[in-house]
Image 1 (cartoon, rainbow, N blue to C red):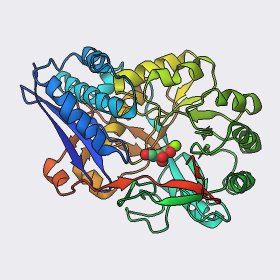
Image 2 (image 1 turned 180 degrees about the vertical axis):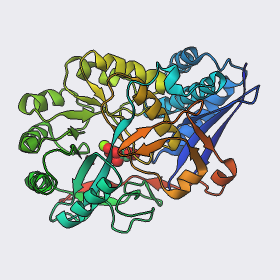
Image 3 (image 1 turned 120 degrees about the vertical axis):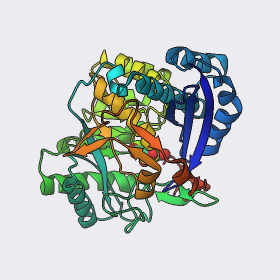
Image 4 (image 1 turned 135 degrees about the vertical axis):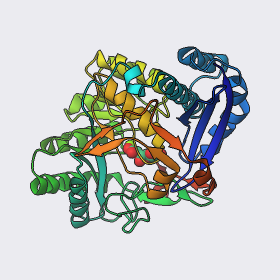
Length: 412
Ligand code: GCO
Ligand code: MG
């Protein structure tokens, strides 16, 4: 067979999503997620102008070869735009291969290594009572592991803290609390690391006192600390037995993790903004992390992330694939098939998409008692309703950013 057409579909049901739909000459279709939050149209242009013309007439069965061709022939390697575009092609080809074989993608990857994928959700609250309510709401939904983010006294707005009454579904669980907010400019938030470092351990102490020692708790530092600050936080959080501390320092300086590691046994997770195995190579080899946060969508697809995770397995490092709502249902499905099949699965992030998104993307995954499963439909198990998608045109949106109290732009 050959590829007959490839369409780039942009839709914005609850937020913007970019989807590549590949159709073979026999009419088999495959979907790939190419969503790059806040920079969506750059990937649309990369796909439409530079990749789609190369796909027409190509052999859709050659997944590895297509990956290598798109990666190497461009000459300009890596980067989030390039790798999201390659990821979308890769996912769509796996989807097609599964449909042609009549098998779910996880079967093509070696079959299930477990019954389901433990997932964590995002609990947050400005103050403790709201945070506790949010944790309880997640537990009622079945979540067995919970990320805890909280407000800091003196700060007005912090990324990752749900706005009360957020507009998607049940505000305590089904919110989309980290949208790239629609509008012509990014929203400005404020930040004070000293206040945060002084406040956070007390929050985890309160959460452990309220919810007990057993529930796995996670926290996202969202790149805001210096190495020595991150080391202090890791140490201060040790009594509360975190499942992981995520993105404790900005990821460009990977040596920073060595310093953090020397001071704390709090497990570290990093890599949601990484896009190739090269970003992970040294920190895996030197065992500076415990979880690989790469997303199928941003790491160049199933083919590339599987290789990275197989490499990580040699060092007992596990997966912790990125799964916020800006990973589309297609990207989430790809993560679930990969997570089910690899041996070194750790945990899957799972924020729930809104009702409009679920109508645009018909999905076959299940969410039962805290565990995800991609389902057994051939391929990835997601179909896109093009008419429904057409109801929600692209809207400009930006992620927020923050400034310190004196006005300096800070990592967020
Ligand atoms: C997470 C992330 C997200 C990202 C967002 C950016 O751990 O889920 O930090 O909230 O910031 O996906 O697009
Ligand atoms: Mg994160």
